Amino acid sequence: MARTQTNGSAAQTSAELEEQIATLRSDVAAIAGTLSDYGKAQKTQLADAAAETLNGAKAFGDEKAQQAKQQARDAYAEASKAVRANPAASIGIAAGIGFAVGLLTARR
Image (tube, rainbow, N blue to C red):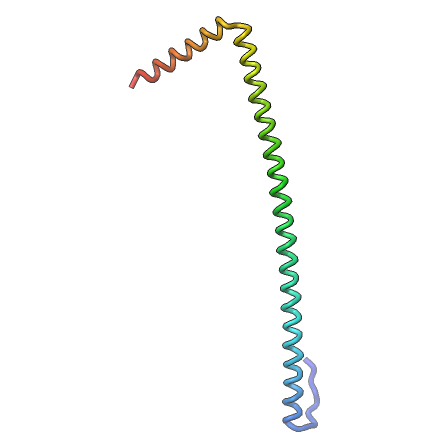
């Protein structure tokens, strides 16, 4: 902190102190404004990054859901082909599974 020589009266020294305090207040207000602006910029940047991550996750989820749907369709088509190729075996397997389920549920 700079020191000033006090050749004048106490009133002059008091006036100088008041001037320095006013300067300090304006400097502190400027710093507070700068920090506020910086905080707002950081908030905006974080919000943009979060939105981008969310959009990426949505796109990834949609893609995986479409893949799962396609796999389910393919499995259904394969099962349908197997049943049409071997109807007797399919009926036998279905009857065996039904019999096993019936035994398990009847043993209470």
